[in-house]
Length: 354
Picture 1 (cartoon, rainbow, N blue to C red):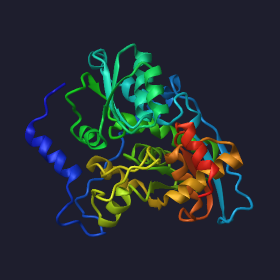
Picture 2: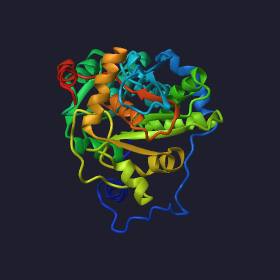
Picture 3: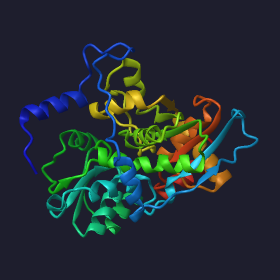
């Protein structure tokens, strides 16, 4: 792997872990970059992702009789049914597929709380190359075991170390070609295929809401809808314990979230918004809906009781946001981004009413 100059490392670290001394006003600066996924890349990904991923169903959420806005029709996009139990297989497979053979042959590595690790490990196994994962040490046991079953070698690290490695795109324990779990065009284009499926199943969709960790899912879906000419709004969902996008949208620039706390909603909610993801998010997304952990727990229970769906925290966060009434009326799709949750945790969360 190429050595990153110390000066560049310092710049990246400052962007990711420092609070701006003079945050921009809520009105976006005219110089804010408007990044877009290259033309044709999303359609190309859509042709190939099903070599590893499946086309997941869209179903109505059975929430009749509950105290929620009746003007909205809530649908669930069941990405928890993917072979790895999460949407990440879409972006991971597309990113590994598009690596130059010389790079891919050296093996791949990524940074993950669990789902991207499984996606990259599966893609690497399909390509016949080794995979290493820098994995957050508090990741659910179910996710770690799944990575090992897929042949991935795990190196545990603290959340801060993992988040820094994402920005630097390097770590002393890793080697091979780095597959960023959310930031690069190839990964985002793969995720966009979920948005194209939503449009095919529900052409008159009014809004889509997806969890925001790094932003690859929500921005990918938004880019896919935009490429197909849809006017549907795409909202991000974040837990109250980790909501840097909401803060960034309020400030008009990518922000750090100093109040970050670890929670069972482990698949979304980072410590900061990466600058390159901000360049997509600020103009593709309609906003961020911040949910309390009680709201997420209630949503988890609802989808389990009413639709018999096992969702992990990030997937339930999107459902909680969709049920909040903040996405507007009409047909709203909540992306159940994954179902990789330790069953003991799931049992505890669903046994007690939030």
